[in-house]
Amino acid sequence: MVTAALLVSGIGVVAPITVRCGRLWQQTRYRQLALDELTNHMERLVELPIDEIAKEADEFEVSEAARTLLPDVVMDAKIVRNDNDAQLHLSINWKRVGNPDPLRLVAWLNRENDQ
Image (cartoon, rainbow, N blue to C red; front, side):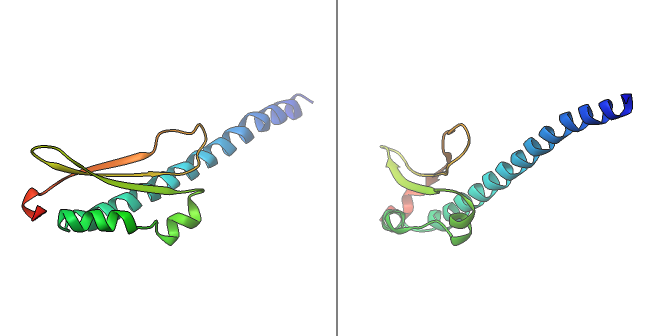
């Protein structure tokens, strides 16, 4: 009787922890996929002249892998120009628990490619 009670209470503790760990690992995989998606686009875009980056930023799409795995995924790109430099801001967001801020990457662009 005591053994059965200990077993039931042990299962009652372990089962929810197992489920939470599984969800945590899933969210970690989603975050890694989103970061991979951002870095792939960033690496491709920073090699282009600034004028072409603006055109590409209007037209780029999320990859098929990210679209199928990340629920309601949205990517955004914009160029922020200051007096001395230009920056490329990329962000990605998808439906997550708690609705946290989107993931963002920023790259400083080479002004020599601005011509």
